[in-house]
Amino acid sequence: MTGLAPSGKSGGPCRTIGTMRADVRTIEGERLGRVEIDETARPVRVQPPLSERPLFLEWDGALDDAGHLRSCVICGHPRLYRSRSLPQLTPFVVLLAFAGAAVGLLGFATNPLILTLLALLLIVDVGLLVFARTRIVCYRCGTVYDRLPIARYHHPWDASIAERETPVSRSGGGAASTDDGDAPETEEDES
Image 1: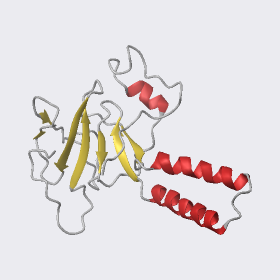
Image 2 (image 1 turned 120 degrees about the vertical axis):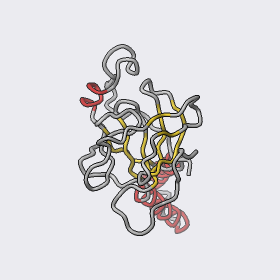
Image 3 (image 1 turned 180 degrees about the vertical axis):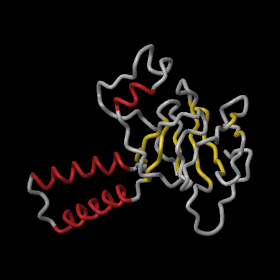
């Protein structure tokens, strides 16, 4: 879905964002849908598909001097973290890689056809890692921003920051759970 601003891409090489995609969420973590936001037009509001009313975007201080997104335009929170977007094919390829490793360990990899298939699987696996897109996520509302350049000062998810920054209503009454030490789940890219 598109926002209320024009969604055309800016022409020529540009250091700013252009058209970015945001998977919008509420502060409680409820998904409101995907919108395209044209940073060059800086729309005042967007209409997520699952929201009854438009959301007003907070552009004040949201971009740094280089044109990178510095804070969440949905909730205005200044803390964002970097996350990798792996294609939905990744779990299947990982399963095949483990099967290939088992075949190699059991000594069945002497057949040239099996060696060729294992090499092809390795190429696909490395290709998935190379083409995985990096995106940024808001610690407070969980909105995921994609298709934009990411500044170096955005770091991967940090449990200590998440514990301080996650709202009480979203964390179940207290601080965010960090028992497993993993970043919160973000939806995989459908395209």
